[in-house]
Image 1 (cartoon, rainbow, N blue to C red):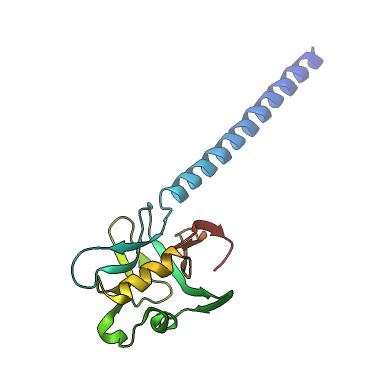
Image 2 (image 1 turned 45 degrees about the vertical axis):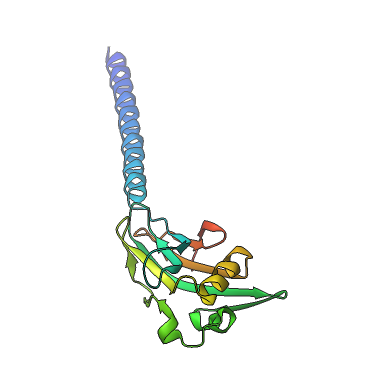
Length: 178
């Protein structure tokens, strides 16, 4: 009689252990899913594009964030490719002579931002470089973009420290660090 009681207690404890392990696995999975949902609900996506039209300084390169969360900008890189050589800089002055810009204070509008500045989702457009329309500079800029001489890239991160690089020519890709 005592043996049957022990067998019943042993099987009850095995069932209780199984239920508790199953509850632990379920709660761990649901925590992971909640984390993923939170991460995806604030995922930025920077789109760098060439624009043409509007008033005043209305031709240039801009960045939009149609993603769901703020993009925290880390670095800006400008590359100029010509005759098989590539020049790199984090300053727009690299391309001024190549576009025929002799007086940048009058001919160009540039955005000044610091590493760590955020671009809000869906609300802000940041003009990285703007020149007056129908000028030799605007035509030179358009040609440089079309023939691939000019490449602009922004490295940014999400609130969850996921890093991405958005480029004018190649789109967006994930990276480990900027």
